[in-house]
Image 1 (tube, rainbow, N blue to C red):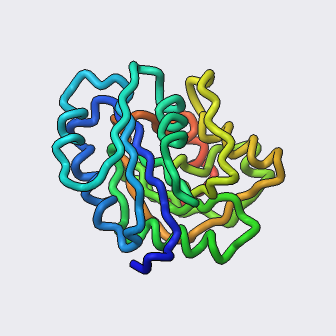
Image 2 (cartoon, rainbow, N blue to C red):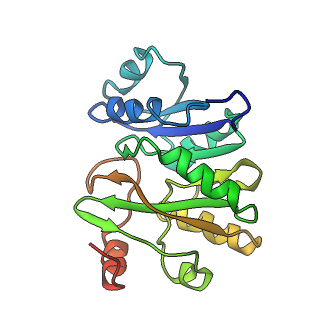
Length: 214
């Protein structure tokens, strides 16, 4: 990777992720875009998550806090980051190894966009999305937290919310006049169970009923 390539900060909030965190970190450290800053925020785990992260040989910024929830962990990770772009990554996902490169390419070619989102797989369901639709976004949370965001556009997650923190972020950005751009490739997959935050079953059903492919 060229030394002048943009720095991307990947922020992982972790809570009791001992079964999945190593695989996710493997995917991160094998990205084709390798100018990365990796920040793991342990959100009061009671399992072996902390030790697994600390035993890694790759450079990782490790933060620890009492259990405050995903939004607080993400915000803490952002405050410790330096990248021109940030990607909030759940600790149980599998990333396509070209994910960062493809999202970054899409975002840099669409200079008016604040963030880039992609297709993804959730359990057995494939969510093949569509170009940014502001009206639809007001009605549906179709954009995952796993999106690449310009640092100067990130306005923080609302730590008072217990659900739909990502949707709240996209809608607040929209209110500021900031929109996303779609990368039409399936770049990550997430399990239906586990993880620090996931789509609600209600929202999954709504998306499926709206005829997203599965």
